[in-house]
Image (cartoon, rainbow, N blue to C red):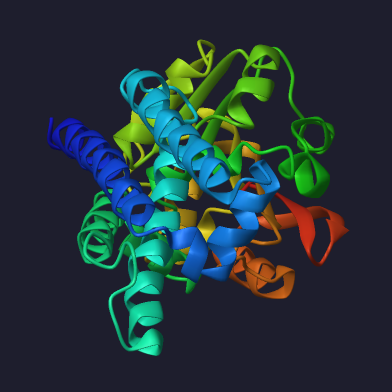
Amino acid sequence: MRAKRKGQSAKWTFGALVLLQAFHSFEEYRGQLWESFPPARFVSGLVSQDLERGFLIGNIALVGFGFWCLLFPVRRDWASAVPIMWGWAIVETVNGIGHPLWALLQGSYTPGVITAPILLVLAIALLVQLRAPAVVEHLLGRGIFPEQLAWFLEGSWRRLVLSPRTLRSRLPLTDRSVVCEIGVGGGYYGRALAPDARRYVGVDIQLGMLKRVARRGGSRVLPVQADATRLPLLTESVDIVVAVTVLGEVPSVPDVLNEVWRVLRVGGTLSVSEHFPDPDRIAFANLRSLVERAGLRLERHDGRSWSYTATFIKPSQG
């Protein structure tokens, strides 16, 4: 419920930002910004030789696009909604800072400077609602990947570093396998792997990620909200545990590995993949040390240092 309220707040803030952009564009037009601001003159000239007409057409198109985004992608929760709000907030942040700086350099009023500070305040508010601080924290190598950026994990770029097909080829997956993916996220890998398993449990601590799995067609993935150190699974009930760029985000890797040991059957597999550009990825040598200390044995290593999959086996204790 709290996450839903935050989502509604972001929509309202985005709407206010688009509306204020309309007033901001009007202020710029009244002050003939294209006459005094070189970037505005350049962009207007791309649209029309008549700079006033070019400026007017460009800003009408911008505001129209903003209201279209509000009424369709944002209001209807399309997959593109969050990227659009992020992009708009970043542009308006630059806008809100740039206008006052230009006015200071000119030493007088410049068109747009009155509404620019309000744009900046709304843009920052939207970034906070989109969990920008959590994003920055993750980029610094701390904390879990925020659900608001799940769309980034499903971009075409990921096929270049570790495609679902490549990961599938590195797993001993059969139609009798019970699989648990820790940190399933939006289901980028789970949706591709689940049809080949008897049961595929996707664990994530963020409810928003699990809802995304369902929205993106992951009907074969059983979504479970849980902490990786306390998996709601029976002892020795899992054949394969999958973890893709997730162990670097947990507070205690040893605690997670102890839980993996508990749920894995004897002879079961732990598959850990790490790849660029994850800021908290674990180097293979460090990972091997951690996992072998937990009692699992390295079976194979595939890939290179910037994108690899390490496969470990739970040996019998006899």
